[in-house]
Image (tube, rainbow, N blue to C red):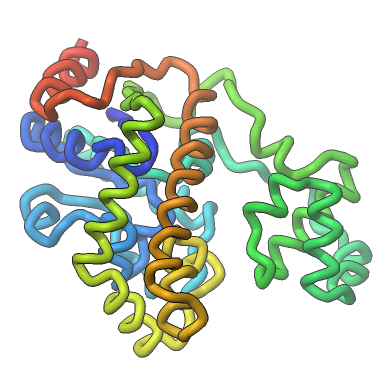
Length: 298
């Protein structure tokens, strides 16, 4: 298996497609948002033509009003990897969700068993109170967990109370002795300013392609997005725009800022993986494919 890392807008998908064509490989999506049906433009999902040409896995698996967990992803991805191995088909894993990579290759953080007494006490608090406590105990987790996600707020606080350590400290432990799946790792590296310009252009292109209409259609069909689907960068801002709470200009600017912040967080995570061959992303796809293929095959 080949793993292609890189921040959003770095060209991972184009490289994966080029390599899949050359090696008759299939693509495993490591993306927590492309799994949702109908969230196509805002998640930069492969086009129907690309998916008819190259088989993609773990895309369009659930409706956007459903919750999709890390554990469910790992179970599904394990099955895809085992099936590809049985068929003798090369697999290229790529996407933008660092925690999914970590869980798939290094394993899930199990944590202490649930404590009914602690959970009952925490459940009596409002979400605002839970979030306030979590900001003090684990600011990183508080930033990541949505205010409406009661279950995860309680779990994070429960872990902190039972262990004295923030849940983030467990999730951020890296460098396990043995990976769950053998793979060759390649990363696309970009100058920050250049990547920021690519991100801004990409957001503009997505909006021109109908992202607002897509968001409106999702609300009309499903009423609301699940708390996991609502974490997708950009959709929250566009939902506020559709609801008349934010102008399109402000929403677009907020999406650009959020996406640039996402790219920085992604790279902070990705740099922690060992044995990644980092190559400059600002090269023609054909050159990137040639360099990556030589590294993968060797």
